[in-house]
Amino acid sequence: QVQLVESGGGLVQPGGSLRLSCVASGFDFSGYGMSWVRQAPGKGLEWIASIDSRSTSRDYSDSVKGRFSISRDNAVNTLTLQLNSLILEDTATYYCAKSADFTVRGQGTQVTVSS
Image 1 (cartoon, rainbow, N blue to C red):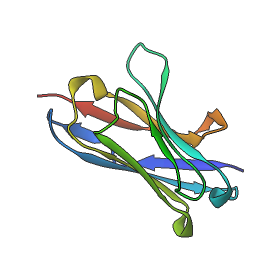
Image 2: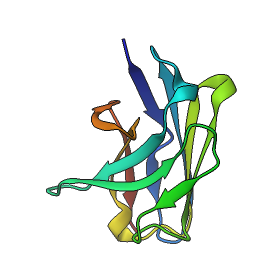
Image 3: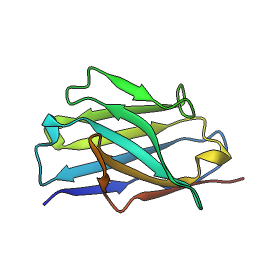
Image 4: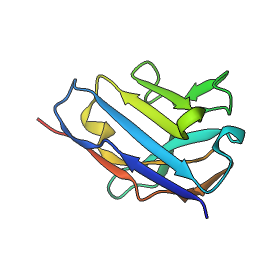
C-alpha cells in the first residue's frame, strides 16, 4: 500500500523559508520520479517541481523557479522541498506524489505565508 506522509509546513512571513519533507513507503521509492504539487484555497492542483529517480534531473514551474529546490534521499525514502523567498501566493496545501500519477499523494502539509 502506497503511503506518502508530508510534514514541515507552517505559518511564515513573506520572505521567509520552510523545508518540507515527504516520507514514502509501500513502493520502490528509488525507482520513481517524484513531484511536489500544491493546491491553494479555491484553486486546482498545481504542479511545482519534479525530480527523477536518481536526482539527475529537476524541473520547476515558473512560479517557483529560483526560489524552491527539490531533492531526495533514496536511502531513507524521503523527498524534500526547500522553500525560500516565500510570497503570499505560495499559501497552499503542499503534497508529494509520484510524477506519473498525481492522484496518489499524501494528506498534505499546509503552508501559510502571511504578515
